Every structure is written in structure tokens, then in C-alpha cells.
Image (cartoon, rainbow, N blue to C red; front, side):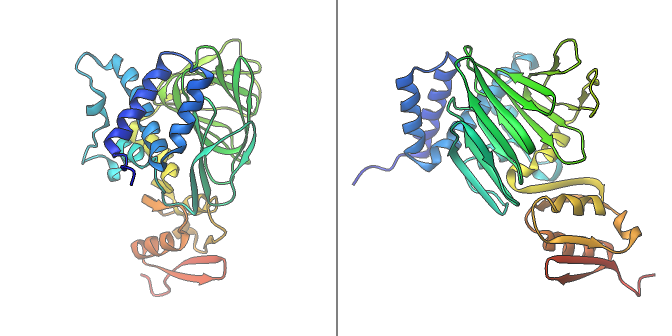
Length: 328
């Protein structure tokens, strides 16, 4: 009977592969060896993602001073907002998370990749970079000798870029182009809304038709692109808590911090066919705060009904929230 590979050995091997990628692009033989290793055990892709993310944090931490250690940076703070920490995400990257359907460790050949309603998918590109697609998202992947290119057609995606000095990594969305050599960032393109870019690791160069030169976005920055052509707006510095909330969808969650109840209901519509209908305007304007499962609009409705003393009525594919008639 073959010995079972220990988790510790897998983590060490993943760190070794990340270190080899840091030194430069892999040969064809080494790339094939890495893919065989990743396919050999379902735990390995998660370990590889964790090692890559920790390596990125270590590079970013050089600016934090000589006392910085990536282990300390990754350690969760028990007082952090609702317990959502960077380590929680990293440790969960190799397993199932709470959405209707999440596929992990899927290799992505060139071509289109699309997720359905309530589906979140993590795909690994041929160079080791990854793209996580949110619900109802479509990207088109292409490779050339000098470029790795992903076109976000619609939806929302998070990119974790592995460095390759010989091939740039480009993300195209609407009339904008983002390039990075080593970074983690999210891009959102939803109907009727401007394109939103959120960088939480590394740096990303953003160029646009009509802009004279690219704009460099550092870690914890956000930019919303106006729909009209022209100069790029000034990016905004954002807090770590906001980044955590905005990227909670990667864990199959939705995080709110004071949004209106009707706005929260619209968020759930991105993940489920069950619609939340709010019949009282005052109830619709109530602020919502908390962390909820993206695929459970009924559970969310019951929770907020208890908080706001409202009534819940479920009818087929609708959940109706209304004020109690005897409320004073």
C-alpha cells in the first residue's frame, strides 16, 4: 500500500514550485512536471495557491520595514471585522466554499470560460496564474509567444498573476487594459454600472483609450471608470476591511456594511433565481450589516425579518418581506 503524502510535505513542495517560478519561466519539461504534480492530489492546488499568495505578501511587505514577516501578516486578528481574515481565504482556497456550485483546480485552455447563475469557479491558467470567476461571468483566454491575455466579457473576476518576465499578463475590459507581472486584483463589469477595479496585492498598470499614459494602481486601491472616454479618475485608497468585504464572494459570501435592504436584495439576485421582494419603502431603506451565504436568499430574509420585526412570505421563486401590520 502506497504511503499517503502528508499535508506538510505538500505545503513544502508547493513552496518549492513557487520559488522556482520566481526565479524565471519554467522549461516545457518543468511546466509539464508542475501540472502532473498539481493533478496528483486534490490538496496540491490549494497549497500552491497559498504558497503563491504568501510569496506575494512577502514581496509587498518589504515596504513595511525590516521587522516584517509574512507569517505575522497572515495571522488572523481576533478583533477583525466579522472574523473575515486574509488567512481564512488562503486556507480555504483549496476546498469547497458556500456558493451554489464552486469548481476548483480547473485547468483553462485558450478559449471562453463562463459561469452560470450561482456558480463560482477557480481556473488555473497554463502559466500557473489563476482566475476566479464570480456568478454569471464570462472571460476569453488567449496565449501568444509574448502575451497572456484575458478579456472580461461580463461579470466579475479575481486574478492572481504569476510572474513571467518573457510574457506580459493583460486583462481587457471594455475600453481599458490592465497589465501586471505579479499581483492580485478584482475586476467587475455589470450591466448598467461602470467598470470597477480593486487591487489588493502588488501593482497594476491601467491604460485606457484617450488616456496619455497608464495609471499605476498599488495595493488597497480602487478605481471606478466613467463610461465616457477620457482621462482616468484618481484612484481611491481603501481599507483592508473594505477589500475583505468586496472579495467575500470568493468564499461564497456577501458582506454588507450599512447598505440599504433593497440594495442587499439586488446583490442576492446575482446568485439565485429566488428573488427578494420588499413591499414597504421604509423597510427597503433599512441599513444591513453582516456576512451572509450568497446562495441563501431565504435564510437572509429570515435573518433581517427578525432584526427589523418584519414578516416573511415565500411564494415559489419569491421571498416577500413586509412590515408587520401591528407594528407601532
